[in-house]
Length: 295
Image (tube, rainbow, N blue to C red; front, top):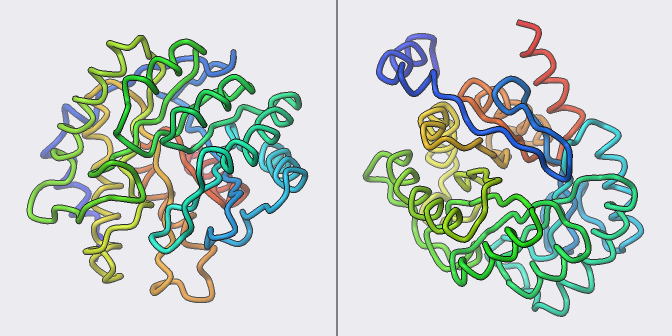
């Protein structure tokens, strides 16, 4: 059971980290005050294999329409992807991803919507950045220098996802024997060094809680791990960069009320010091964050 005593103990052990501030910067000409104002990233899935049906768009027109709606509902950035991260989902090659993503990126940018593209492929990244994408949501580790140079050349931002493997479709088991935050700190430190050496300065860090791990299929174990990482997020802020979290779902706990899961986890993520909330449920998350800001 999560209690006030648990939160108090966590704070007492990490008071210095709790006071850490993060870098603030502009994306697409829009300033983000990460230290004082949380931001929201809405999701558009162009893959038919994506499980969150409300976010799935099978045509460019429907994807653009959803992106505009998400922005109107309060999304500061709209994240689009053409390959599901589910283990059983079909792979999407470069040509398929580009044919789906580029028209959507172009139209959303023409409408003034900031766009993030989720991919780990250099050719897809290049095409989307040339179409106007503002952020690379990087879900892989291979050819990272090439990807970072593309981001820097377009004055874009990058979200570094914690990926213990070549890419999000080929992650290994999660190491449950050690402090996950320290493990992530080591990973992000290495990636930050490479990204900055390649000229990237606009960087966010994503602990990767929404990814598939074979040894986290037990729902209680997975949710316990997710809650632990959310509440300890502020410890990663000592790296100096804002934190992005993809909010998870906990089917087994929420059942028919699964669309309430992301708002629940948003509270834990906010308490832990998250700066950018990636969600399928923009209006609900905005309401949660607006309410927390009142306190």
